[in-house]
Amino acid sequence: MSDVINTGTPQNTNQGAPANSVVPSPTTGTPVATPPAQPAAGASLIDPGTAQVNAQPPAGATTAQSATLVTGANPTEVPVVAAVTPEAPVQKVVPEKYDLKAPEKSLLTTEAIQRVADYAKANQLSQEEAQRELVRESDSVSRLQSSVNQAMERQVQTWINEVKTDPLMGGANFEKTVRLAQIGVNKMEDPELIKELNRTGLGNNPRFVRAFAKVGAMFEDDKFVHSGNPVGAGQVNPLDVLYDKQPKK
Image (cartoon, rainbow, N blue to C red; front, side):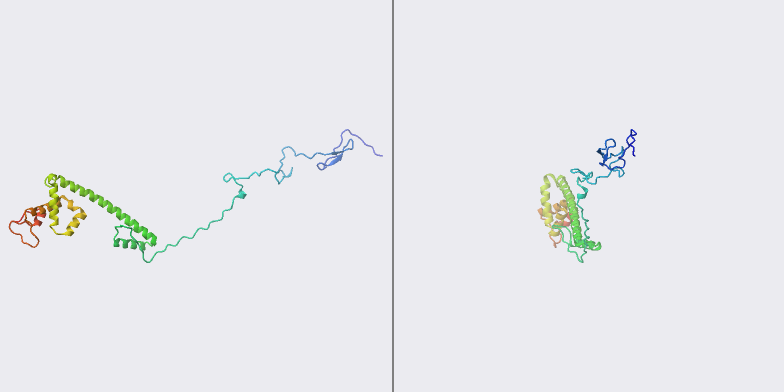
């Protein structure tokens, strides 16, 4: 014979029962569904000891790292840039003989061009490097010549002003002085002399103007001694006049 003893406190017969399991009620015997177990306070949803992590995000959710700060794109979507292989340096070719061409209107002489070629050879320059060196040298010479020309122009203008302001050659006598000086230099019959006077600007030097003006004045008195003729009484040697010597008597 079995007795049912009711102690007033029903025993929990659900220990160890799985979640959502059906157990009979201790009082009525009617089956009752047990609710799912809740995590303890402070337990993490990703703590393996308390819950399983859902590896698949809910529908419509985005991943935490969907873009980078600097690209704004998913790192997995950034294209991979292939490594670039550097090109091999071009081998410089030093020619056996340089073919250097001076720029148009260059002031370089043949000797100067050869000096550039010798320099290029000694320094193992390529044809292109040697040509650039030649152009640089030509430009340098042109700038130097331009500077010299400007200085000469200033000097020539200074000489002309000195002649114009000279008490004897300048003022009202300026045009006559120039005319006589031109006559005097032409009577020297020396084209190279005239060429040098023009090239150097010395034809405007007051000393040359004065000397040739004296030679030119001799023809007004018909006292010029032609080349090869002896100097006679009353005649004046133009070289003595040119160098400010007293006429011979």
